Amino acid sequence: MFENSIITLNEIALKNNVTFLQKKLGKKVRISAVVKANAYGHGIEEIVPLFEKYGVNHYSVFYYTEALLVEKSLSNTATIMIMGWIGNSDIINAVAKGFEFYVFDLERLTLAIETAKKLNIKAYVHLEAETGMNRSGLNANEIEQAVSMIIENSEHVHLSGFCTHLAGAESVSNHLRIQNQLKKYQKLLTILERNNIKPDYKHVANSAAAFVYPKYRMDLVRIGIMLYGFWSSTEVFIKYINNKQNKVDPLKSILGWHSQIMAIKLVKSGEFIGYGEYLI
Ligand SMILES: *Cc1c(COP(=O)(O)O)cnc(C)c1O
Image (cartoon, rainbow, N blue to C red; front, side, top):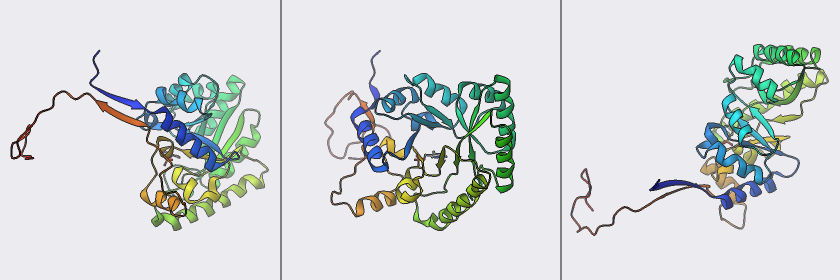
């Protein structure tokens, strides 16, 4: 078929971004590539094998069917983490497949444990803490309950993570709000510590937070936009580049859009072009 307009992915740019992030974040911080929303429009099936080729082995998605697509696109095993929606009927599949997922209500935790018991395996969960974004997350009381459920059912549930989402780290106008969220997160974490349970990964940062608040990279960062070659905001970019000698943007955009030229015309100045009122 004749394609007169195509989207391309630039592997060299992708490698550049992954390598830059791996180097900046260091070996102690695991990178989870956020590939929700069809890998930010780049295509899950196309992008995951490339991320995999350059060493990414942790993927974050929003919902269950995206997790299936990631799994299908991988050649080797990797961790797949669902941050958002899993219909109750898919919990059984998610647990059976060993997908990790966020728990932000006790009903999901109960279902996960029941399912894991039936299958005689473990469910891998990340407790999401409510720290002030008020979107999804467990409050202190619910975390207490979740923790006792995890302790009681330790054979069938594993605490892979303790996490939260920071509201708008890409803008300094949210600084105070984010500081409060981080304080709240640390406070809620003490519930786990008091009960002697330790998550594999503590994680709060997306791209912006990983660069604006490097102290809070913790064990894992969930990086979306920067992997695709964009800074979260001009503010974040300026903050990064300000104290660098070399003012060249280290990120490269992966997505390209190429079209065939169908016709070229010479037009006299003052003539109309196509529809509308635009004069050249
Ligand atoms: C989308 C998302 C991210 C990634 O954010 P970027 O700004 O693209 O790095 C991280 N965490 C959660 C919970 C998200 O929904």
